[in-house]
Length: 360
Image (tube, rainbow, N blue to C red; front, top):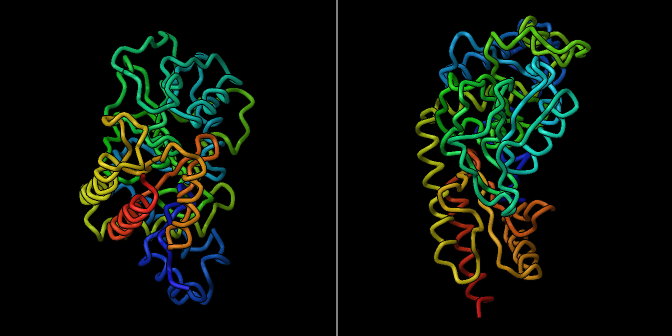
């Protein structure tokens, strides 16, 4: 069977070049006689993989020297807890609720202190980003938290909130490495890699050094950022193969022009799909235009049965994982870095043909 166009929100498509390289090295990584899957995480070969991955990520994102890069197991849900456990010294934190993941993060933080929603777009099914220019931030807040790109709803912060001097913490899982980002504007940036960076199994946290080392009393060893910072993310056995693939993705990004070039390609891809949706007689995008995501494009017909028919026929035609999240229905095309422009063009061709048959 030939490769399909995979529009999954995560785990998502990876660059074919990366998959081919990994396949070629599967049985013997650089003459070691072993696969990375069976390699000791204490070996020099794996330490080199870790060091190179961190260096390439620092180069790509221009990460300042006073930030640590940490590779942490457990994905996003563990970060929902680690952030308050490590930062909530005053037991107060403010959250901007723009979707399910920010909502879950806020709920988790409430286990450790007072977690307050200072803005929300839930009143319109998270179809927009609320005004964050003058938020009622608590004087005692330890941080302000946002989910930068909302995978389920297809919205993104194009402008960062006014934090009024508080540290900004951002979940960047679904826009990770999709374009340049000024790391110095954040206290913590973290992202599960399974959407835009690598296979499931690790979250990468980029943490300013002064925020490390004052975890709440009773915080388990493996939930302290200091544990990872002090051990080079090797306190325990890390998700070795996932880190190895992430490292290859970093090299692929550097080879293809870096994050400025990637943002341009992502803007071109998204424009193809949004331009079609804006003139379509059958499909529509429910997101406020100025808040649209480049990574996750949601759309509906307004008829649940017709939506289901579209998803089924699209899959048969080689366009898989277009079904929207179970909480909102409809469709969603996740067009991450590894999705080629051709995939978006062919999807639009299919949508046009479907529209001709179904639009009355």
